[in-house]
Length: 255
Image 1: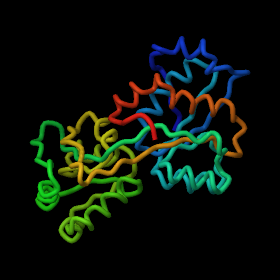
Image 2: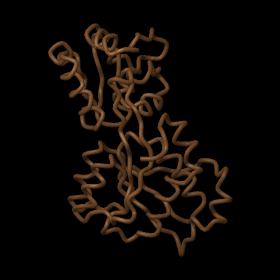
Image 3: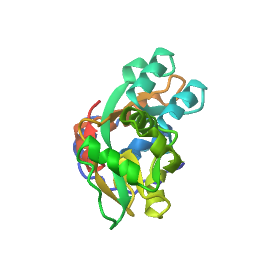
Image 4: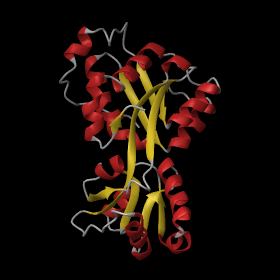
């Protein structure tokens, strides 16, 4: 998807003066990103486009799809996905090793339709009770969070009860949007993806005993013709000034 950036440029002057964005000319940078970090990529991308002559085209997919696409040689300049996926691409020679950088991590949570009563999920037992009593459960069927929740159902011993209620959705905000439309009662997804949907309220992150953090790392694709602009974009994603954007999107800066 093509993103048209119109965001504000507050805080960029010091970055410009520090030489973060030294460019020899305009470049078109194609980014393939895991959907769970979409909000951060979009907002930081706004700053990047406004402070350079470069343009970004960003496509958001499930984390495993990032690795599959880059491994297949698809035409992207920067890849953003779970650290293990990026590390595998580095090992396979598909990512320039010294460009690999950790961006952020996010926990998992539960959401309900805006204005609906928020169930108690403050303990593992309370979480199990909500799963068993829920009429329908939306989740990301092709992303890292979906794999985590399916495994969690097994560990909690509720797979048989939960399976008939599951509504798998594409990675990203699609599962939360289904709850906002009333197509599912609850959504299990990364906290940032829940917060990104106006028609959905975050119940809370998962209890600490059950929590899983999904990290996000980036790297420049080996066959990219835009290595330096790609490095500059990753540098901005990991700069101290990005911390506020990352936290606003329900994530924690760093790998």
